Length: 158
Image (cartoon, rainbow, N blue to C red):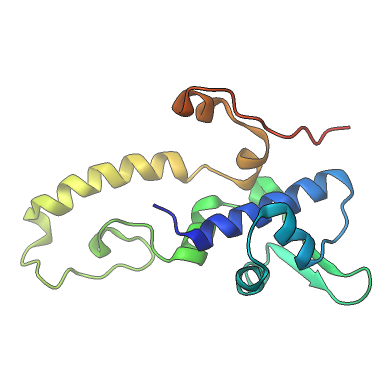
């Protein structure tokens, strides 16, 4: 499961993505918090991490705020997951970016737990590695299949 922190990050980025598609202007953190339903005190830290990753920018002043500077098609959801939540592998010995040998494992090659979770994780990676912020902003067909009902996606085209 993704953490609440990650949900707040995604909600904030979707708000900034929608704003980019409509006015292109910057949003104050209070406005992002209000539109996303995320608490302002958590957003301050989350947006700082996302800004440091080069996805958003912040400006000071009266017309300042946060703006999405990266094209939503270029904002990788799995990279964001790793940034906010850390490694996404179910076992440390399967992580691509934070590999660690399991303390209790004598032989990775014959570890049945590793083998089974490697197959599950591979399937997950195949799906998630292509997911971008653009997908979250514009598409809902898979969600409709999973949830069994139409999912409202805001139309930001003029």
